[in-house]
Image (tube, rainbow, N blue to C red; front, side, top):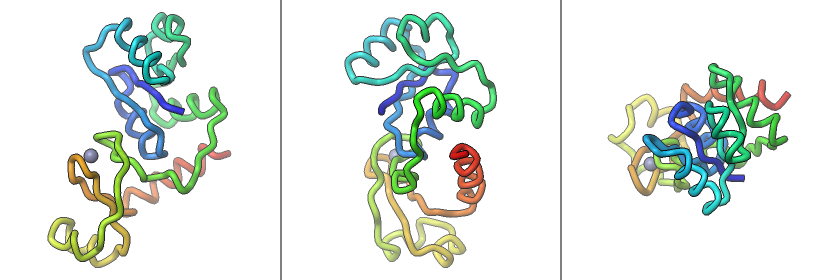
Amino acid sequence: MKFICDEMLGSLAKWLRILGYDTKYVKNVSDEKIIEIAEKEGRIVLTRDKLLARKSKGIYINERDVEEQLKKVIESLNLDIEEEKILTRCTICNIKVTKIDKDKVKGKVPEYVWNNNEDFWICPSCKRIYWIGSHWNKMEEVIQKLKK
Ligand SMILES: [Zn+2]
């Protein structure tokens, strides 16, 4: 399942990436172009624009809160949240992150992070380093809520 989010849904796109879904986020792109990309790449359109949702047979997101938006997508498509896919994708570049040795990230992450984590991942494109850190509790809370 792959998605394309319109420019009003940046946070939703980020969250879908956290959950491991290939999600394109576009800005300043016409409705026609969004539909074209969606068809070409087999993506489901997520949009705050009712008309675009209808034209693209996508999902109309009228919720403002990102947790509610996510819930809408998950419920509309009956998505499963797969534990092993969470945090496998760069939230900025939408590509898969790869595991990196702890030794190699020394000095590149805050010292307390390095001291308190064993597992690190890196985005091959933007080189952003990921770990299951303090944001994780909040994320996990949201994910648990979504699973119910
Ligand atoms: Zn990246």
